[in-house]
Amino acid sequence: MNFEHNEDRRMLADALGRYLSEQYPAEYRNTTAYGSTGYSAETYAKLAEIGAIGALFTEEQGGFGGQGPDIALVFEALGNHLVAEPLLGALLVGRALTEAGSEAQKAQLEGIIGGSTLAALAHDEPANHYELNRVATTARKNGNGWVLDGAKAVVLFGDQAQLLLVSARTSGTVGDEAGISLFLVPGNTPGITARGYGRIDGGHAAELVLSGVQVGADALLGAEGAGHALLERITGFGLLALAAESLGAMDKAKGDTLEYLRTRKQFGVPIGSFQALQHRMADMLLEVEQARSAVINAAAAMDDTDRVAREKVLSAAKYSVGKIGTLIAEEAIQLHGGIGVTWELPLAHYAKRLVMIDHQLGDMDHHLARWMALAA
Image (cartoon, rainbow, N blue to C red; front, side):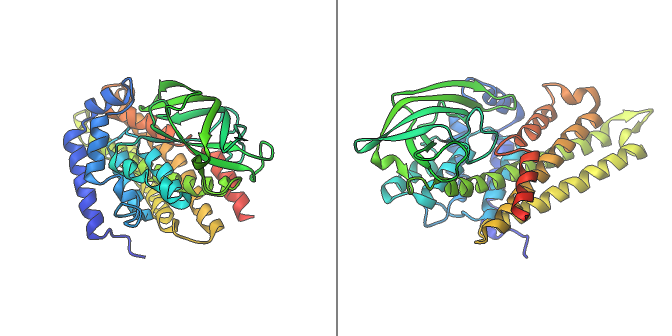
């Protein structure tokens, strides 16, 4: 397997890294990420212009990448600079459109890729605990359309999204895989109540209540009752993205810690000369490379037609970055001492993001159990 990026990917990585290094300093990031909207519309538009969103989709879909390594490259760069902008929603909703959308529905991809349409996946519910099949929100037929009722939790940028992808049950009971359908719902549809809030690691999320939300027949994405398989597929893209983002954040935390050990002096010598700290730093380096291998495996597995093999690799990657990311966050703070937890030092924000990535789309325990179930 060739692990080197082709020329197009290297050019994108250079452009993205250069822009973020020059125009997205830590102070600016924190101002916007912890601000009232949780992101900068100007930065999001610029990322779209550079091609960060287009790289998540194939040429046929309106982008210029779309393969696992393209997705990993973009999100690793985002993680390295702690970018809070809503690219994950663009990936999840956009991929749902490419996988199952009608031609009319796919027309909305242009706005997503261009950065003018903010999209969000509204699937998690207050009691589902990461299980894709636990959907209590209902959708009942009403003439030629549907009426949606229910609640969705921790919807990233859900109070600002112009396009929501909502999971709802059209048949069966909570816990059944069959009977889940997906609907494309404009964010300003009457009947949607959103309570937005800032996340502890930056960015924004919302609790949504859907009460008698009426949508047309054309809102149904894919076949009625067959949404579980599509949810699993797009969640797979999300798992790869989060694993790569975590890797980027780990790399930055590792690099900053190494630099600190080289420059911080005690007893007249750099503390990096102390053997005990060298051993801990060496362990960090090895763990980050282990995470890198997991991300590379996940990127390579995205096009695997063997569902079980693909999903095992994705769950293994998410488990790995959850475990390693928490370790890197803890060790980096320990090696920095007290300043490691201060707001002024970027490391504190990287540590928060590394820990919180573990709780998106399934934590360590969830994916370890899932891997074992798939392997059985």
